[in-house]
Length: 138
Image 1 (cartoon, rainbow, N blue to C red):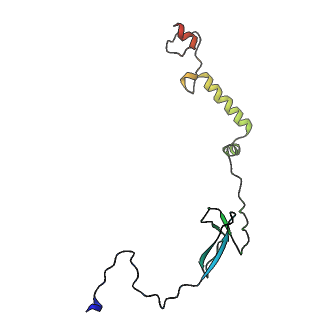
Image 2: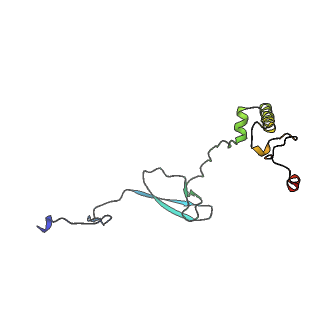
């Protein structure tokens, strides 16, 4: 009856199997060297594809395989700036024309914040902004 008794265990508990007849999968140790002269080895499965570069566990640098060549750097396109993308849509002449239009609208008071609008000098509006010297005397 004791052979049929249920055994209880908690999560993460040790296995009840013995390791006598278990053989681990074939492995190979691969060495890496980083630019800071750190050397470390990692176990990989015998049939695994070994990466040519690995992050150094000590300094975080890019470590290269001891028995391998340095991988070729990937060809990357230069980053495009906002100006580059703008020039793909409009020419310099179009941009200058657009700037002149927007500045004219801003100066005429049709667009933009109220404090930038040009007011008529003869206007008797009390709410209009005045230069500092006129504010003191009022």
